Length: 202
Image 1 (tube, helix red, strand yellow):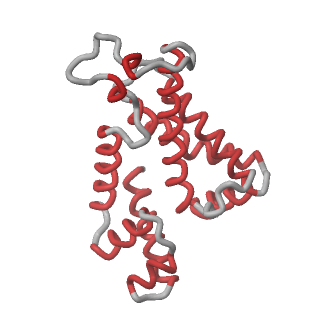
Image 2 (spheres, rainbow, N blue to C red):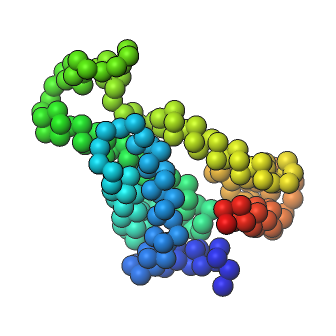
């Protein structure tokens, strides 16, 4: 069975309540999730295992959410990775905020001055030091660099347009309408893109 079909089948099995389908998905994606969490947590004080904690929590939330039907758009590998990126990023942010709350009095309500210990370097003060819901510049830069690198691996602009539209969340039908072609043509282009990117990763 082709790898793409295997992942799609594992996703379907997990959504149907088959917990064993989580293991091959874990083996396939956990390393990438750890790298994403590491990029998000870079520069934050904490344990070495923080990025693994965030990735484990993210994968657990993904599995429980899939089994409970919380991701209706999750159908195959095209939907899976963007979803894992979002969950991992949120878990990393939540982890930093949780750690800081524990260090600041276990959740006791305090003013903005509580976020400044008087030792911060530069002009960072108060709430500006808190991790926000948006990606850090470092995380965004790493993701942008990786996307540009992968797009540069594609041999023509047509494939690059398809890849970008897919990353932006357009369906195959919508992309076909943009290109003025049939959906099967889009599917073939996506298969070629995956094949080229797999070779690059390998």
